[in-house]
Amino acid sequence: MRKVILAAMLVLVFLVSVLPGAAAYAAAGAEVTLTVQQTFANHGPSAPPSDVFTYRLIPQTSNAPMPVGSNSEDHTFIIAGTRTGQIGPITFTAAGVYTYELRCVTADQPGYTIDRRVYTIEVHITENLEALLIYINGDNKVTELTFAHSYRTPESPPGPPSPPPGTPSPQPDGPKGEDSPKTSDDSNPTLWMTLIAVSSGSLLLLVWIAWRSRDRRR
Image (cartoon, rainbow, N blue to C red; front, side, top):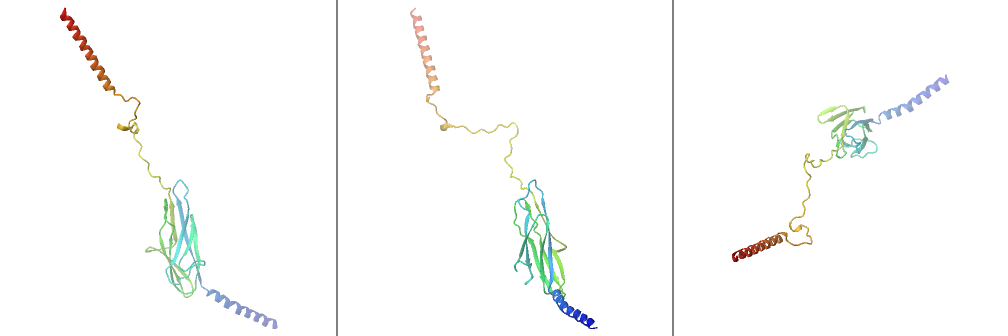
């Protein structure tokens, strides 16, 4: 009999020591983890310089809980390639509606198309510390936090148009006027030809006059 009473007392002590701890653990708070889906597509022949994108979670409600390791103003994280990222866990210890904003904050770069959607996240915590999540994009409720980015190799700027077939290539203009190169002969060939012509004509005239004078004497 004593053994039965002792066993019952031990069970009672165990229950008294365990149940308050379990109740305290249940009342510690509700933990919420946000899942973010990222897709990245490469549409160019060359590999993109980077496939890493940065996100920022900003609380819109005063005193809204934040993930461990972040500050009260924002929480930033990165996702590389086509993968899933997680925010949290975030622990809520009081009932209420907590609102957050999520967006991609990677700067614009040549060739990249970055998804600039902005999500509003509402976390509804009940009196029993149960969580209900609502995602809003614009005016629509959505079921997932999804961002789709892409990359296309930037095209090179067009060069000058090619000349049509058979078109002679333009040649640089040669020196003109006073810029013409000079040789060591500064004589004017036209002047010399004129002098030769005049001299020849005078000589012929003198021969003709002499021939006429001789004719008359005969």
